[in-house]
Image (tube, rainbow, N blue to C red; front, side, top):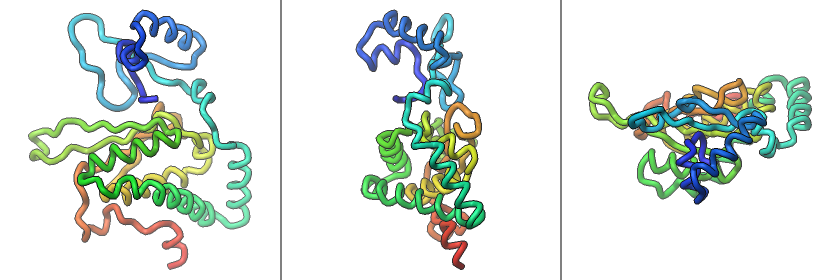
Length: 228
C-alpha cells in the first residue's frame, strides 16, 4: 500500500483499466472501507490539469481493521498493568525498548545512505515492510528558505498498534525519537492515526544536524533519563 492515490494511479500500479479500478473503488466506498476527496489529508496534492480535479482515495478507519492490529486487547491490558505497578516511567521505558529494537533492525539498512533524503526513503521502505505502509514526500525548497533543503514528511498510512497508541502515546514519542536518531536530524510528529488523523506524519529536516547541537537527533532515550 502506497498511501492516497487517484484511480489512474491505481490502474497503472495494478495493470488494470481506470474504469475497472473505479468499479472496485465504488464498492469499497459503499462499504466505507475507503474514503475520497479532492486532495489527501497530508502530503502533496496530485497535479491538476484542465477540467475536474481527480478524486484521491485513501483507506478509512474501517479498512484498517483488515490489517494486523498486534493483539490490541492483550497489549493494552499489559501496559495498563505496567503503569499501575511501575508508573508512567515504566511505560516510557517499555516504549523506548520497543523503539530501540526497531532502530537496531533498521540501522544496517540506512548505514550506507549518503544523505538524509536517501536515509528517509530507506526508513520508509523498512517501515513499509513492517506493515506501516510508509512513504516519503519532500516539498520543493523555496527562495525564502535560502535554497536550503526542504523538510521531509515521513507518512505512515497504517499503524498496526494505533488502538494501543491511542491510550499510550509514549509509543509514538519513542518511535519519533528513533526516527531522529536513525536519520541524524530533528523529527517532529504532527499527526497520528492513534489520535484520529488519517495518517501518521513526522516532519524531519532535509539536512543532517550538527553533531554539537544538543537539541538535535541524538536524544537520550527514556531509560537513560530514568537512571540518571
